[in-house]
Length: 80
Image (cartoon, rainbow, N blue to C red; front, side, top):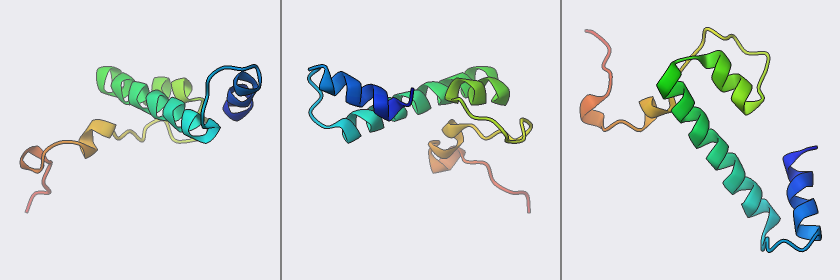
């Protein structure tokens, strides 16, 4: 079952979901945040991809979401 179908079913069953689209976005954001924590804690790209239900990418390619949220004073710099 897709996320969209599940949320719509909850809405149809009378659960207090005001906006299905916003609810889906909140769920996806929470999943991404948890995946970023998993990546930072383990460095295991395969585990992160499995958690997010993703397949088909090179498991050797790994970039932590935290790398994009560091203050500029601690950002990595290219030599030279």
